[in-house]
Image (tube, rainbow, N blue to C red):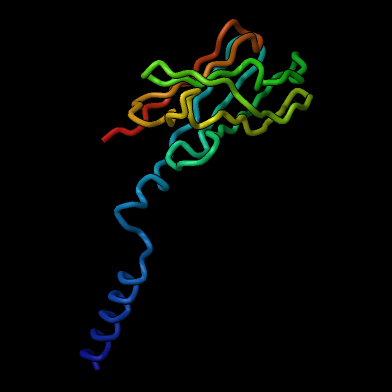
Length: 147
């Protein structure tokens, strides 16, 4: 009886290992870049990258804003820029303008510079800058492609 239990457990472990979908090319999809927060002025802004590890047409960031004194009806796409340590810089292209004292949405940037080179290619750092959001400048930085 013990031998059959041992073989059954072994078979179950073998099947579980063989059915795993991970592989060497899946690393980019599983990298998680943490949130950054800035609390200057009367507005707290939290920014979380959504797809820095996945090649797409846009680089997207979740932005959450909280305040008790400022109306959050500005167009972040007009005041946001994304740059890398190679000197490339792109302006945001999309933000769902809304209003209120607690607002969130996805801020999108083109994933390539004006010459068509991917913004993340050969870069080791990206910086998202918001200018004039109840502070002169808010900077959110992430190290990328480490390793």
